[in-house]
Image 1 (cartoon, rainbow, N blue to C red):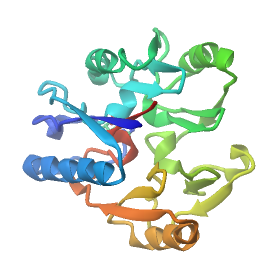
Image 2 (tube, rainbow, N blue to C red):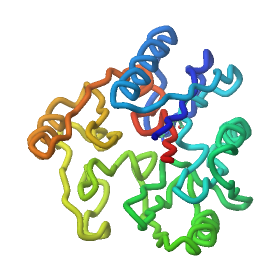
Image 3 (cartoon, protein in one colour):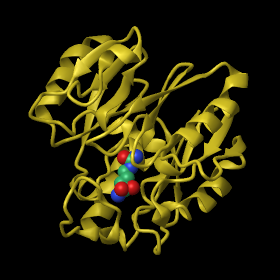
Image 4 (tube, rainbow, N blue to C red):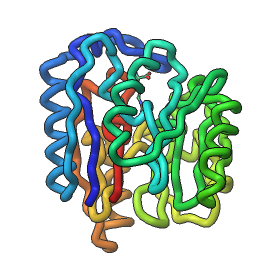
Length: 258
Ligand code: CIR
């Protein structure tokens, strides 16, 4: 069974952290509708959605991916790079406690889950404005007993490693080659985003489906051409309001496989 932990949109999302985007008005009602449609897409692909209540005082708390990284053996509770986001981990740790042994990143380490890309036993962590070397060392200590290799990748000019590259099938990465050099990611197949769609590398792969923002049609076509014949279909979701908060599709759930 696969469980996806989500959290309702905060009514304060307009006061979110922004790094590379300028602030625009966010329609909170529409954001909530889009988020429900995203959860429906997860359910339609066979996942069980466990929705946590909104955290009204934590504007970015819908982006649950950043507060933890869930592995088969353990869950790493992060220490997010943005100070405003650190309280998000309390309720996420509570939600994950029944499923996994918890390990916690401690100061001076900081890491956002959006910087952690897992490809089998290879764990790539973005060295970014949010995630630093002490956290990467702590992750290596937590994970090496289970056979994982943790490796850092420099991230600059975009928010998180997974803004630039995500796993889209067992052996395939969706990548923006202008932001990340594919040669450091090992022996994989790659689908490159259309150059007109720089932000199009964040996709959420779930077995036979890929949840993908509807505003990157050119990249979507590339994904369908490459994966359609392998029985993986693309499910488009409109996440315009979440994108204004610099979010995307991987960041709105935490995936627990059991
Ligand atoms: C932030 O800057 O932290 C939020 N406004 C957006 C976080 C998006 N997280 C993600 O893509 N993993």
